Every structure is written in C-alpha cells, then in structure tokens.
Image (spheres, rainbow, N blue to C red):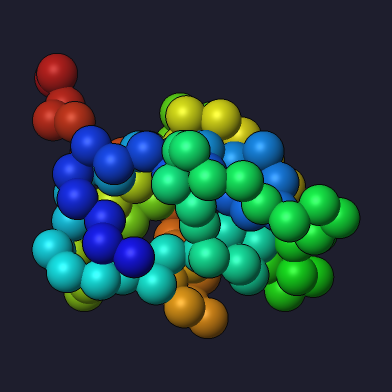
Length: 102
C-alpha cells in the first residue's frame, strides 16, 4: 500500500487506527497484528484476530517509527495489535532529550 503523509489507516484485526506522519514514498507493507492495514473506507473480514507474535498492542498518542525505512506513524486509536513493517515490529519512537535548565 502507498502510505503518503496524512493517510489514515486502520487495523483489519483490532481497533488500532494510525495516521502517517512521515513517509519514504512508494509502497510500504505496514501491518497491525500481523495483517495488512486498511484505508479508512475499507472493511475487514469478520472474526479475524491479531497473530500471537504481533499482539503486544499499540498505545494511543504514541509515535512508532523506523528511521531506516523513513516511516513514522501516530496512533490515533489504541488496539490489541502491534504495528510492523512486514515481519519486523515497528519500535516506539523515543522522546527527544531536553537540555538541562541548570
């Protein structure tokens, strides 16, 4: 799927929803719960559940990114599935360290 900046996606197997914040352009195999993510208007097959290897969950308001690929997404609705690019889990983005005020 092509993930452009501003694209809203939802999981096919849980309640997770994300918005693409940074994208390398081109096609990205972005998944949630081990299954490909869907565009907002698409519907998922009933009865699907997250794969056990990708059932760690995603936290609302958190950013997940892969600097090697150049992708960053913001979770707008939490869910039971973990975000991944293909079979590689997408790590939670670390907060930037602020300078000391001393």
